[in-house]
Structure formats: C-alpha cells, structure tokens
Length: 193
Image (tube, rainbow, N blue to C red):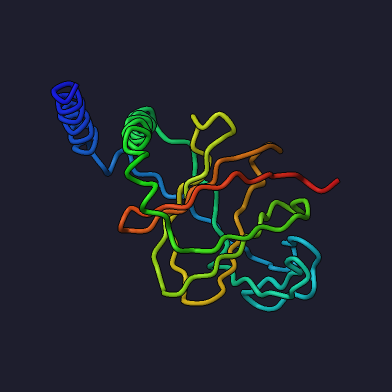
C-alpha cells in the first residue's frame, strides 16, 4: 500500500508540473471588478454610502466595507486549470487526516439575512494579519465558483463576495493561509425576494 501511495504522489507531482509548465500568457485570465457608483450596491440593510465604501447592517452591527474588500467571483477556468484543481482536491482529500490538526485560527461569521443586490457579506476575526485564499465550490464540491486571495488585519475584518452570477443554494466555503491551514464551512446563498 505504501508503494502505491508513493507512486500516486509521484504521478500527481508529474501531472502538476506538466500542467504548470504551460504557456501562462495564453491561459491567464484576470477578473477585474470595480464599482463605479457605490450607491448602486447594497448588501443587507443599507445604512449609508460614501466614496469608495459600502456601509451595511451586519447582524445588527453597522460596518463599512471598502470597495477593495469586495471579492469578485472567479471566471470559469480553462480545462487544464480545472484538471489541476481536481487533482489537488483529490490529494487534499487523501491528506485530510493530517489537516485535522492544522485548522486555521480565524473566527468566521456570516449574516442570516438573504443576499441583496448580489453581495454576500462575511466577517472574520483573527489575532494576527494574514494573507488568505478563498475557494468556494458548488454543493457537490466539483465546480469551483470563487478563487481569490486577500489580506486581513488583526481584529475584525469584513468582506463582501459578489455572487450575482451564482444560483441560490449551499456552497462549500474554504479559507486557507500560506501555511496550509484551512477553515471549511457550508454557506447558504439566498437571494432576497
């Protein structure tokens, strides 16, 4: 069994190396997201808006989210990129027992209110500043619908995820840091009627 595991990991490394050595200029897609007029964007109950900021009611607390804290949903990946993600997810599943000891030390909170105007707001509390990677998958866990990196500061942090192109439903939400620690949650995206 150990030989099979070593052969599998070696094969996985070869596949990842082959995929990553492709022409990056051809396969790179950048998703730009900007808000020209913040008064057009609302999430939760709108308190007020200001230049480059979105003020909302989040679980009874008035918070301000700067436009740079709004995370755009990733565009669809090309087939090679999606294959690489699938292989990495298989590897992560095999290493699941090891990762139980490596939980991300971030407190994660979402609002119970339905999403208004496409902005899913979430809060995080951390004891130190970190660079995090957000990955969000559909209910089955096969299709990645968001993949972005962002920084958080020590203390309370609030982010908004642009979910205008997502269907209502349950999604797997994963936050990872650069040390490989992660936090996994199920989140419900419901559009306000």
